[in-house]
Image (cartoon, rainbow, N blue to C red; front, side, top):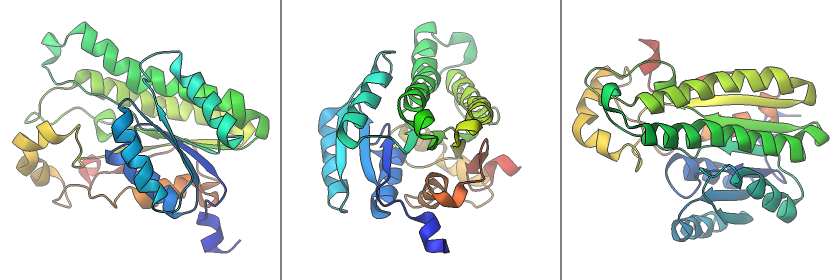
Length: 258
């Protein structure tokens, strides 16, 4: 293969959770531009449909699946619907997530369970369902977990505490390694992307009070842009990453390097 062929995604089926906005939509856009067929999920059907129309405008086949991944029954239903529509799943991007800000000593248990249930348990159940139902039998698959620099370290003391979020993303980081080792025999690669600070709905509140501080402790001195995840997301979904598995790659402007 030449280099262009290594990165092509024509004919591949990519399932992206949390695909209606933010980082999930940016990744879905990248896959659409590279020729993939898409299935996107989110809780809010209206926003999901708007995203689907935008992706169709890029020439992609798009299946939109309104769903709540906090329910343990949802992951298998999603996988079954994607397979019914497209026949198989080549790429899974576990992007859906939630956060909660509070001092650790005051963090509500209900919020802890919500964050861990969606960010970690939901991601595992979806990876398990995709692997069992499609990837293992075909001996082919790419799983990409969207972690966070918050899963690599504690928060800067100028930031609000998010202990459940940090814990969930740290768990996702090591789940990536564990699944990569176990499923390599099936030619399934499992990698994680650890974004730094990007302007999204989830980070809006944080950026309102801490954007200047974030830029100060980010070596590149800026936030992430809508293009900064696309190249890596395509790499990890394509044949160009066939010998990369179990890795966690930070896209954070250098935050995790200092």
